[in-house]
Length: 190
Ligand code: S6P
Ligand code: ZN
Image (cartoon, rainbow, N blue to C red; front, side, top):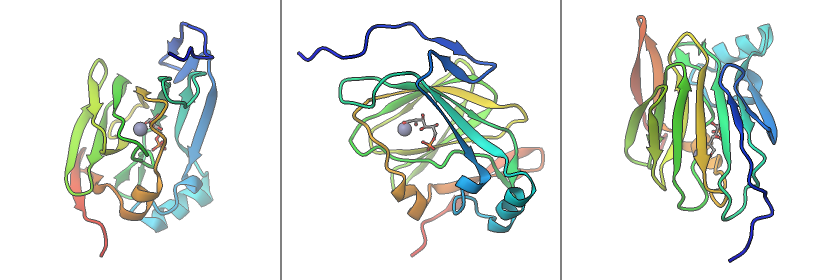
């Protein structure tokens, strides 16, 4: 058995600040990083021109993305919309057949899962853990008025495939509907 180069450690989850302490990296995605992801491209360009807001950020624990390791991170999706579509992550699948768990920390969200033909949605809520089976692409959407925060725990061997979602989408979009939301089919073009 290979011993990890990572020493055992205890991390503090700063839910209000959306960070893991100690933190390995913190990544911000602004509207300008998300061209091509939202249905209303015009609304996205207007958002970029006005303030280029942060849509989401990820604070990761200092765990290497290597086989055998178990990285974890807090994602914060800020509240808001681009046109009718709620703020969301880019979404990705894993490069290997590895699952993942998401545990809600604060706010109200929808986890969209897509296996290439079937769409499933799960509520992302505090004290609920959503299971992402191997082979399902996943995207998190903030449908509330507060920041959506969740803890993701995944295999260091998983890798991230952004290409498939960037090209073919997630099979559905989460849109505002009155004071609530609705999930609309978004089949891949062609
Ligand atoms: C990693 C895990 C999350 C996401 C994060 C941002 O496997 O699913 O940490 O990376 O929520 O989403 P995305 O789609 O930009 O990686
Ligand atoms: Zn993932």
